[in-house]
Length: 284
Image (cartoon, rainbow, N blue to C red):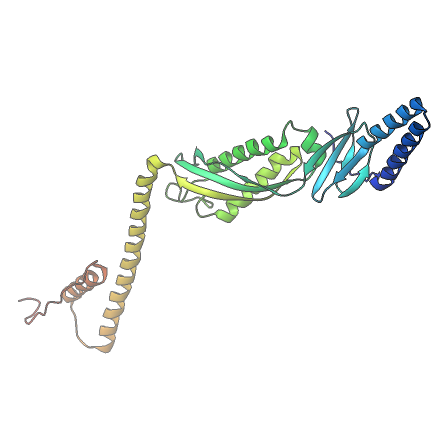
């Protein structure tokens, strides 16, 4: 596999001066009636123009001479090379790949929709030209494969796998770092460097979206109820301790149970309660 070899050809301005001299010589020979020499010099001048190349900023030219790689010109400027050299232009600018939405199964087997945005650029021009047939198509295909593999490697969330340290929904930074590392490994063959990779779309597939939404809502309600009950128990415990500490009233076990029941109803109920004044005793 060819590795990049950066070269700096001779300046094109000197070559341009020689070309103009050849043109002037051809005109002078033509005016003197020397047709044969004029034709020869004109042909040489015409061939000479094939060696001029212009390299713009953030561009490169990959040069091959009769099937042999001779080097890559990455410094912007005006140059002249062998006229028989084949020149292929490559952009060194950063490019965005907005991946299409893919329908795949996550680690738990749930169908999900996922897409990624990838920022990439050519790092090794020789590999980009000679190692793969079409480096742009190679980036597209390998990026899709990497996103599919990522989705298969992690669950969507912790509902199915509570022991998962990283999930697609909550571990955005970790997932992006893993995706970027895998893409760099896959695309190194083509001389491509991935600057950044991010998940741009993540959702359950439509056929299970409603069921998963209900499940998430149920989990949220359970978690909220658990927090409310824990808080209510703490408040009741504190109330009993303060009553006992201040010696406001002496409560036997049955009265404590009644008080605990009433406080828990008040604290854990979803609706406002209406107080009931007991004018008698607990036993009447």
